[in-house]
Image (cartoon, rainbow, N blue to C red; front, top):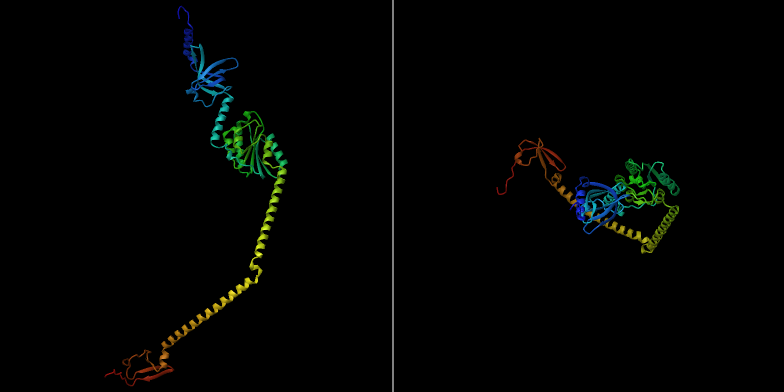
Length: 405
């Protein structure tokens, strides 16, 4: 600067020093709406922040942009944190952003999106987990606000369409801070009711009124419910995470009642179809049995049925004859064996020996005398013969002379 006269460059540099040297501008938070958002090949983002009256240029270097938890877009209301920097060559200044975070509803939407991505990665929303609804349910559960229009719509339409089924009602809070816990408690009770299908219903409302059905505990309880679940929360344009976790999503409680109940025409068609199938099965069975009976009646055995028992009688007679012969042979062998054993026993009988002229000599004590040396002169002895006993007295003993003496 010369004599108080700035060049353009000097003035811009002076402004840069003032702006960037001001402590209050080195760490600022600004709330505004993003516009003209553009990311260049370098990864740096350039955009504007505006409110109803003013606009400020802004930028975010790639190293900071990569740390964002969301992808900014035009129209997002954000809180930007950064510092003021200036470009002397252009005579402009801008907000150099270190971080961006959604503001207000945008922050809630970001949390919801992050939860949705988390549960999706876990597979809770996979199509292959979806179970078909039963054609003819017997027990249907309904979770809805007590005495609410949604509850009444479901009851009314089910009673008209299919009054034979049993309705199990589980009133619950469906709005407010206590609603998630109330819904989870109703889901726990419904688990024990042996249901065929469950309806979770709530009429339309503002998006914040439906927040209970975006609660993680509610979504997980719906995804793990033991029977198919139909979600009927809000209107057609309203979508909650419970809709993704349920086996079927419909737009209204009335639509849910229609989805879980068959049409009367459908019931009649089902009955007619089953009746026709039963008749066809019975007639087919009778026809097959008739053909089988006819085939059996043409077999030779049925042409001469007496051959069945005649052959058996002949076989029995032959077997009886062989058995008699075998018994006779065995009996003869046994008899001969018996006679042989009897002859052997007879030969060993002492009385048989006595009948051949031998005798048995005993002293008075009953001892058998087997040698002449055992006897004494004058001794009383008993001589046993085959037909009696002789009492005698020994007169004299003569020893037998051996041959050659």
